[in-house]
Length: 270
Ligand SMILES: [Ca+2]
Image 1: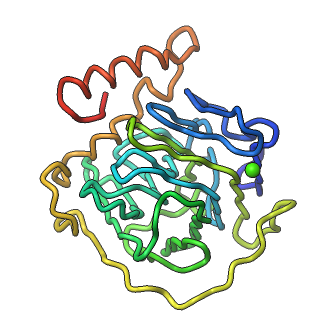
Image 2: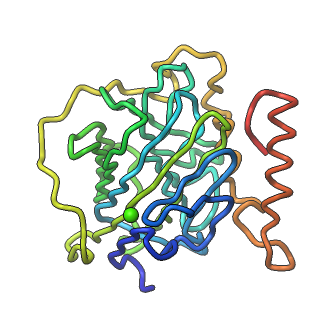
Image 3: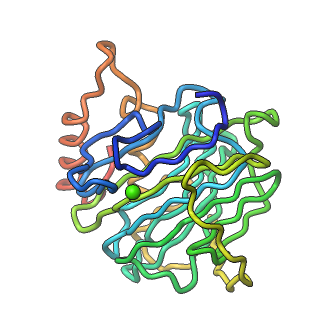
């Protein structure tokens, strides 16, 4: 499709533009569920891949109180550290709190700002929305503003930067992510057919700002800023999302590797 077109994926009939699908349960019409080790993403083939400024809304349910589920906007050029934006993750402190993150490449190292969403409970469907515009990224849950980023906000491809692709993952046997609907409306564009009803703007809630230097949760398991969170190794620009020489991604081999690492170290990574 042309860059930055509107889209609406209902999962009534396939995965739409989400062409890279691994281990996803689509047995229920109208929704897909990621559990254990599973992932699905639009192909990150270059800086103009995916989408740019606009409004992204995902209707999804995260189950569990451990890191594992993720709603992720992956760098269009598939390079990491880089322009990764995360609309939903679960904190590693066992509280089940959800948060959003903006990552950037800081001289070859991953840097990020994370903001915990106040008052959002898992185990139920929510509308997760990202509004990406010049110098500002806003995250909302069920129409309520939960996090605003104004530093290190990337420009999209049309404005000299890079787009991001829409992705989802789960990499924990104790969590899952069910997705029922994905919409994208480009900035200044027209909503796709059957788009969700507009949300009502409400006053922002106080949100705990977590910088790389001072995570709000006190959990030794959460790695230092210089090190990537364990599961994000799964999304590095390595073989995982790039076909091998034979053009086939060996998901089973990768899953076996991840599981072996978990059994050896207690962490999910490749
Ligand atoms: Ca649906």
